[in-house]
Length: 65
Image (cartoon, rainbow, N blue to C red):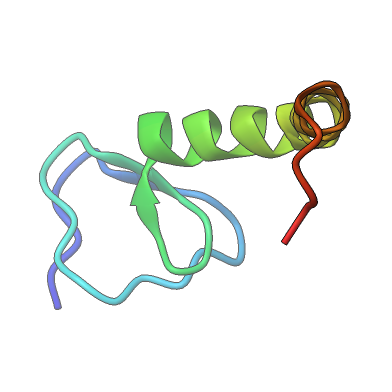
């Protein structure tokens, strides 16, 4: 495995692949920082999205699975 020059790897990141020069990687398993941040933001919105889906199911008379 190779970690490129000027690469940044976040603390406790699980590096399982080569990291290119200048890359910024976070998470476990490690992934490009933009992908990791996008996932964290999506997880923060998940409870509200589940409430909205539940409300729509009630309005439509659809039983949740």
